[in-house]
Length: 143
Image (cartoon, rainbow, N blue to C red; front, side, top):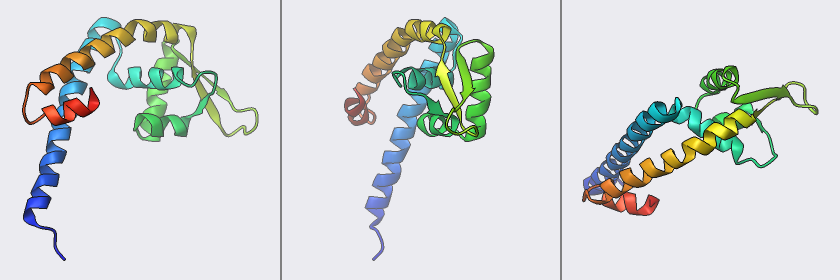
């Protein structure tokens, strides 16, 4: 039984709306984090995900899934952050093929200063989106 054209269009419109809100948020976060802290959104996300592990370490492939990047893109990103002294990597004691990644103190310090910027920009963009009829329902779900 084919799906009604209205349902297909509604789903497509929903996806376009979600993509538009995502692009708006990511663009504003990228500009603010880069300007204020020298971080990309992806770099901030990696630091944030790792810092929330609370003593538990992540393998590179787990990190790639958590930040929604390919494994090779995650490795390049981690290398950049490691070169800046914000992350460190080490071999897993139980499985020498596994590599763990954790945030250094310098990374935690940068994350602590960048976190309020991230939160403020996110609140601002969601408040602006709430004023736009096509984005308001999604903004309400996130906020």
